[in-house]
Image 1 (cartoon, each protein chain N blue to C red):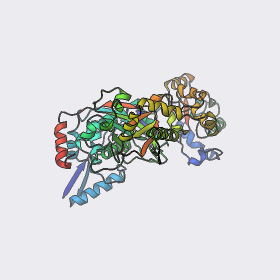
Image 2 (image 1 turned 120 degrees about the vertical axis):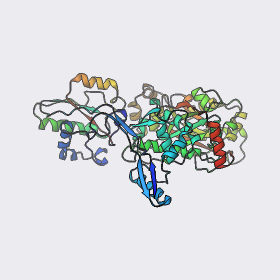
Image 3 (image 1 turned 30 degrees about the vertical axis):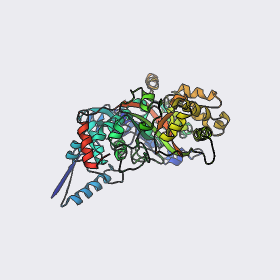
Length: 439
Length: 97
C-alpha cells in the first residue's frame, strides 16, 4: 500500500512523486523538484495503476511444512514476519482449528462485515477479528469485546483516518458492565500493563493492533507515519472498576453513551500520550486540601497546548482521566461527583491566549475543520476543550491513593457500542475456568 | 511431516472504482491544484505551475488558491464539486508528508 485512498475504494497505489522529508521543512531547498519535473508530468499522463479492474481480491491459505511441530511453528513465525504480518513478538499461527475455536465466542456469523480498515481498506469481518485474536493468543470469550471495539473503530465518528498521520495516536477501549470481570479484564493494579491473572486486555488490544496493521496497512513509515508509535503492541484495553464506583457515581458507559448501568459495553477513543500524576499530598493535608491540591495538579498537567487534541475539541475528548477507586470514594465523601470534577478541570486547565500565541498555536486552531474550534480563539483564557462534558473520567487503577493517570486525547469522537454475547457465553466462561484456573 | 495451514491475515481488498484515466498530453490542457497548504506547498506548487507553463505550450494552470485549501476542506464533497465545475483536465494534489 502506498496511499491513504485505498480505504475509500480506490486501488492501493497512486501516482506520486516522493522526496526526502528535508524538502518539506521551512526554508528548504526545493530545487530537487526541478530535476524530477518529468515525474510530475508522467504522473498525469503515463502512470498506470498496478491493480487492474474492480472486484475483491482475497487472500489464500498459507502452508508451512516441516519435520517437527517446533520447527513448523518457528517457520510460521518467520514467514509471518517476512510477510509483515507480525509485531515482533511470537505469534500463534491462525490455523483453521484455532480460528474456528475462537469463533465460538462470536455472536454474529463469521462472514458478517464490519467495514473496511483504514487506510489500506482491508475488508473486515468477524472472521478477520478471530484470525487476529488467534494470532494474539486470545480466547473465544474475548471476541465480543474485540468485535465491539472494531465496530467502533470503523465508525466514521471515531476519526480513525488520523492514524495514518504522524501523531502516534493509539486506540483506548474502556469496558463497562459485568463482562470485564467475567473475561478477566483488569480494572485494578497495573490495568494498562501485562497481567497473567487478567490477560484479556493484552490479547484483545494486540489483536486490534494486528488488524490495524494487516487489514489497515498501518506499517510504520508506510501506512502510518507515527513518529513514535507508543502503546501499540497492545493498545489500551481495560475495564472500569465498577465495584469501587462511589454511590451515586455513574459508570462511564452509562454517562457518556447512555447505556443502562449494568450493560456490557465498550467506549472507544484515541489518545497519543500518557502521564502519571502524583495526585496525593506529601505531609499533613486535610482531606479537603488533599483532594483540592490533587485536582489542581491534574488540571496543571492538562493545561498544555496539545494541538493534536484539537481533533476532538468540539465533540471528542481532550483526554481520559483515570482515578483509583479509593480516591473516588474519598472525593465522593467530600461531595465531588464526576460532573463537578469535569467542571473543575475544564475551568482550571484553561490557557491564557498570550501563551497560545507565544507557542504559535492560533495557526493550528484557525485551520481546524470545526467552526466551534476556530471560534474558541476568542475565549481568553482558552479552554482546552469545548465543553466540560468532553472530559472522560473513569474509575480504574490499583487501590492506592497516590497517582492518577491522564491519557491525552487525539480523538475526534468517543464511540460507544453495546457488547453482543453468544448464547454459549456461560460455557465459554466455564472453559476459561477449566483452562486458566479460578478467577 | 508436519503440515501447518493457516489464514493469511491480510484479508481481502475491494477496489470499487478505478483511478482517474490519464490524459494523453498536457499541451493545451487545463490543470488545477488542490492544496492542503502544508509542507511548503505555498512555495512548491507555484514552482510546479511555472515549470508546467514553460514546458507545455497552451497549457492553462490555475492558481494554487483556485480551490479551497487546507486539510480540513480538500477532502470534502464541496471541494470535489468545485473541481468538477471548473472543467480542469487534471489535478495535482499536494503536499503530503
